[in-house]
Image (cartoon, rainbow, N blue to C red; front, side):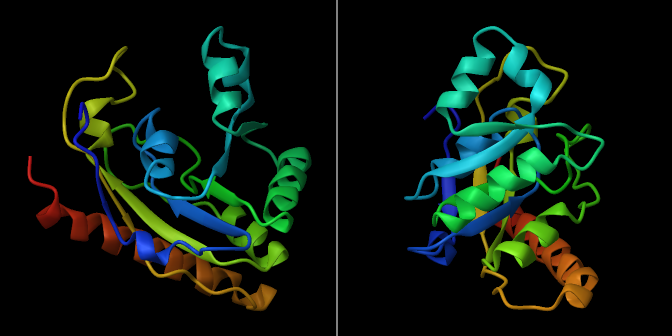
Length: 188
């Protein structure tokens, strides 16, 4: 009730097998906002330094977070992601790599495409709207507001490695389209 959460497109989340949800990133709460809109448990990568913060570290571990060292290729985190997907689990990835500084969508990095291709699993585009307004990175605590999450049709697995740039562009466009589509569904 505090965030008046609304979800759209939950039918696009696969009922079984490994899958990735790729979403824009606006707030500390994004894993919770996206995760509560799915009926399946999600695992997600979090910067490794967050695990050293008292209270936060143990809490995010209970929420199925695992560490990733940003700014480099973290093979340990990639292996963990592959294990989750191979076991039929769900993985939540924020391809922008960090929370938005101003609420706008940032450039997507290609790591999610590589993981999806190697794991041969569908990638479900998602968009969050309103999370930046309720808890931007410069605020210490959240405020009340409305948050909406939309899931789009999955990008199916089975594409060749040389198609990665095309798939990345398709994913970016899908997330932008979902985000813009939430504008009329997300009254202030």
